Length: 355
Image (cartoon, rainbow, N blue to C red):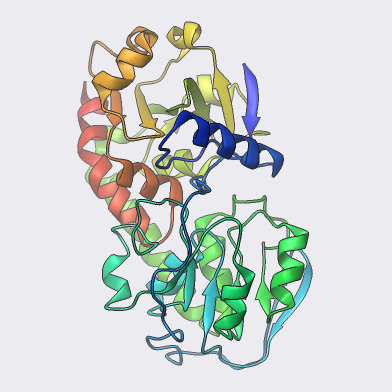
């Protein structure tokens, strides 16, 4: 086995092998290969429409200003209630939208998201069409929107990017002590809410989401104590997520336990490549298989025949997630995407756990 990345390959839409190779090279150079809390395919074009300012109850429940936060670059002070917010962190906009705030621009990490957000967040946009950011970041576009706050929380923590953004306006970056592109969803929610003077609302969103996960776990007692692992097929390879990865953490929140096969890999890396010839070594009561490009079970098995050698495959204990939106929702792990992912996953997880 070889260590692949801090957080695993991007679960996103890749149109060609050449484009995938370019993305892998770019992400590898930046020390990250995906993961929302791994899903950040570096694709897409420039803006599609605009929203002049952040909207939607910005003052509701606001704390007193100034607000002070500590990100990985030092102390950040937000002097007053922000009115025009740009969201550069790859899932920061989900937190804003959950708070009822529509950003003037947001980062689109998958080109299939026409408005830059997943289906779990579309209704939160209302009729707005925020400007779209992709890599490389269009700093001129951001400046033209005259924001008074930029969020780059779920990010690489890139010094040059942060320096350029702070040259435009107050920027809240990767939280102090957080791994690049691996900020726990609870932390990113409370961190962003605090920056908006909405700390209590952030705590409420986290509590509601944790209550939802707990309720789903209680509704599915068949999950309790069952071991689980999550695989990803991508670019001709197969890899496994560690117990500390967001996807695994969400499954354990439902009652599952990381399989010894997974814990034996350690948690220094979030993702590890597996030899396809040794997929028979994968051992868990339930195995979840994600696909980089939304392939069906039959397509993945045709590409990787040794998937059928996984213990439990013949018994139906291997759950293939072919819906790309569901995989992205699981990988993105925000207060908006988590319920979407869990609702779609629980039926297949239940079948696999009961087999």
